[in-house]
Amino acid sequence: MTVNSLSALIHGVVAATTVPLISDLDDVFGLGSVQVHVKDDLALIASRVPGDIDLTALFADQNRVAKVALAHHQILAEICTSVDVVPIRLGGVISGEQTAQELIRKDGDRFRETLRKIAGAVEFSVILNDGAPRPVAAPKPSDGRSYLRGRSAVASQVHLRPLRIEAAMAAVDALLREGTRSQQARPLPHAEQGGQQRRFDTTYLVDRDNTTEFLRRCSTLPALLADANLVSAVRGPWPSYSLAGELETTS
Image (cartoon, rainbow, N blue to C red; front, side):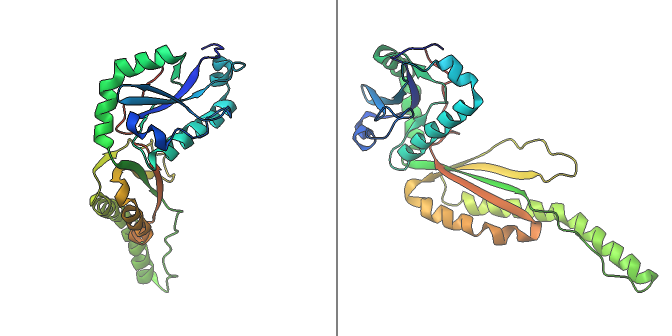
């Protein structure tokens, strides 16, 4: 990637009819509103790159990339609150109107199909992690028999936790599946021996009109997870990153 005053960083693709609802969004680089490139029934949303920014240097600088990534995702998050959007992975760049038109022409069918799948919906991510360790202590024994009973009780608690975790995750999945359009489990990170583990990571496609109810259900998770010593994190609403086949890059 090189300096190009015509370059623009792509954020996503929307239906052309929805452009009036989002065309006044601020761009990533503080140059004004986002660019809109329309072809037929689709519109590509992008931020013009200032002519003095070398994109190769920008994407090689982790601190700068992190700031641009945050602004990129904030734009997509704002769009998805009212408009369906196919998100494009950070790093997709066009070099002018011609390449924008060519991108829409080349990938238009895929964009249309994704917009059809996510019509009227947003995505949430629900994550369950181990809570802080809880010491399992036996009561102070008064004799050998009470000592053995205490040891047995501790062993029983340790043995029961995996069963409680399994039951809690099944209950969460059943609770959150109801009223959602689709779900997708994401791969869990490798668990370190003896460390706190991620137990559950699932995205849910939720109708915009149902987001309040979905979040209400999520608010009941702490009570549901307490016995298994799990904690929850709910993230979103986002555009549907899971269903959208994000582009790696463009010319």
